[in-house]
Image 1 (cartoon, one colour):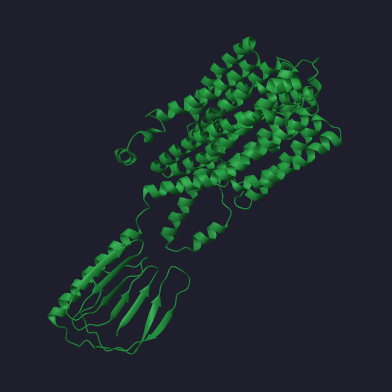
Image 2 (image 1 turned 60 degrees about the vertical axis):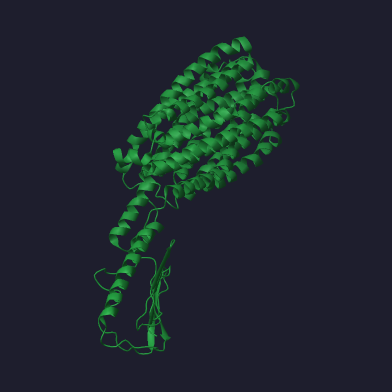
Length: 602
């Protein structure tokens, strides 16, 4: 028997048997099998052809019409599988028949037919093996990736709000005055610190995701040109040079230092703007708390920028580990400094600042293993892109923070009891709402990555999926909070008057959760397609309407007027997102038609 077996992953064989009959059978999946049965003087000839990277010259016959002479009884088998183990093995075969030197005309015609059939079959196999995965498969992979990104992001989003809730609970045990003063200071800190670092986080996520995707495509193209994988394997082990990362870190450091100076030197004036006069019992503890928290501003800004960078890498696990380690330190220090060292609200601020620096340094250490943090030349930085996109988001963030701060200011004018109750409600409201923000940030990273590849179909599927799951999550949170909020409030204070006011806010905290969930997800989608101008302009309009309501409603309805204004604010944010996605013009045009036809027309 004459046999030769070539294998490379899949199996293709043709067996020539049966003296007077001929039959062909083809079946294919990821590997294609060809079974060919031919007779006329040939017996037991088995040829195996692998499925990858095999090509035959169509001009040459699969079986040559030249002389097939007697062979030695020892033959070699060549393995060319897709792995590093390649070898030649010998097999002993016994010849059962011999092809004579003269090939009859009928044999020649059959051999020619066999050549054409096997060649066409191999072409079909190669074409199917090189076919790009279908859009359905790609969309399923993207949705799976979204879920895998969101799960760690949920944990990361939950850590800091939970620690803030614990901080609020520890401070609440000191009294309503201390709790109210810390609430005012936290609002001011959020205004100044988040005014710049939230835009930086959002822009960094999109820019880094696009940069990583483009870098991967460049490496892939270089591999194809080189024709070898040695260079790409070396590059994969080296640290990347990404200007988007270096730009984000430098901007974060500068912004953090500026915020620290502004909060420290302007603490008195800022508290006066919040309605806390020099004669108020809240003034002294609030000012101490604000100055101490200002020391942690650089670390806070840098850590948020680093979270955006890791999201751009589609890595939501590393920030969770760093945040968990740093915030665990804060949990340990809260009772130690607040009660044992008798530092009160100052002890709470010191604990938080220490944890913020631990988180920042841990993230920098992890990032330095995969990216060169500072570029050799400053000319390669993307300051222009960051400042342009960040400028829009600064206006957007300012509108958000001013609206929330106006709500806090109107609550503070109701007195210490009302302010303490408002602080508890807002902390729970934001902490729970930010859990759904994990979906928005994960969707942002995926949308930015696939948009850079012009894969609009996958972006469309991810968008629909994340909105559906976000609404379900919001409704679920509303039900859970509606049932448990009254009991949950007792963890923050034992003051009977404060608890009585807090229980009136259960409707505000629970019913607004679906609105909050969709609003945060729309933000992530806007940032993913770099629709920063619309995000900024729409938020300014929403903030202006909500602020006008907040200026009037509390004077008539008291604290419920504040909560109604904040609910209106989130509802309008959600509506702005719906309006943008329904528009057939702008970055979401591909949601309203056949993506393939639109791309061909373009």
